[in-house]
Length: 321
Ligand code: PMV
Image 1 (cartoon, rainbow, N blue to C red):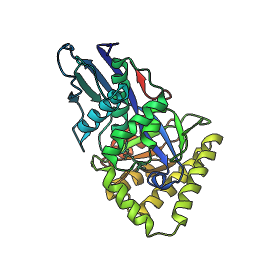
Image 2: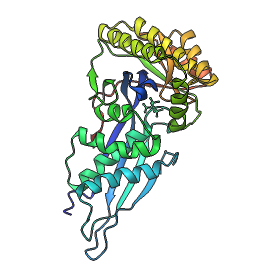
Image 3: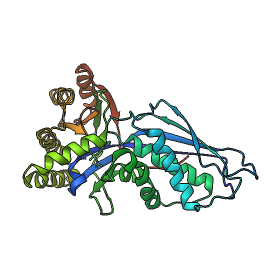
Image 4: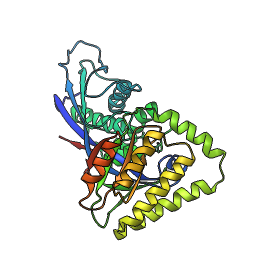
């Protein structure tokens, strides 16, 4: 294989789900947004020995990221997915790969860290291999490590972090970019509680099956209400939809006392809306602040025991550095 680069680097943003998490696994639409916290992946190709059998084993140095829930196995799967695309039979002297991850995105917290790391790994390994992959091709390869970590994910995480921006997502359909009428002022509050999406998604599926169909319909209505509010720049209505979404998710046991405490604190701190984001069971919540009031909301979240982040939309998504 001709080596096109010895070192390649890529980064991908985190994501938040504004409306529709969990329900999107079951076919309802959801709105998500890529945000400016990043996972960076550096891939170094070792010197190929012409006589050596190809080694597709990668070694991992994960800085700032705990090897949580088999993350290093998922990174290896991401790298192997690219290598398999080149051909099953790799030539002798194929380089060994060293993969280094550094990330600002908390792992197991509902911000899509595994999708960011996996997609950045795919982009960097393909650069090393001289492959030019479209974002659609990265999306499809990324489902291999994502399925390993999350079981049967909807695909919303990888779609959002790869494409960037604000996304209207429905499982099985191409994700659509949305343009908000004005920028959103969002505060993320981390409860510090780490959990596994896979178990939470399975539990939600069991609970949803016992509920009437109108739960799914309610989630769908809230997502479309949010899309209209975003297009019209009516953040009061968006905030209301977020509040209703939090209470709907709570009725399906997705929230926790820690999440509820941060949501309530953000609302008391003047937020227009607040809800858990991602799989729940711990992890993070988001609050929509009035313009100029993000600091006040973040302070309220901090006082209630959360770790606040100010986030802005990342418009570009996955990129090579
Ligand atoms: O908690 P996260 O970042 O893994 O978000 C998962 C979003 C879910 O809707 C709960 C699952 C999915 O695959 O869509």
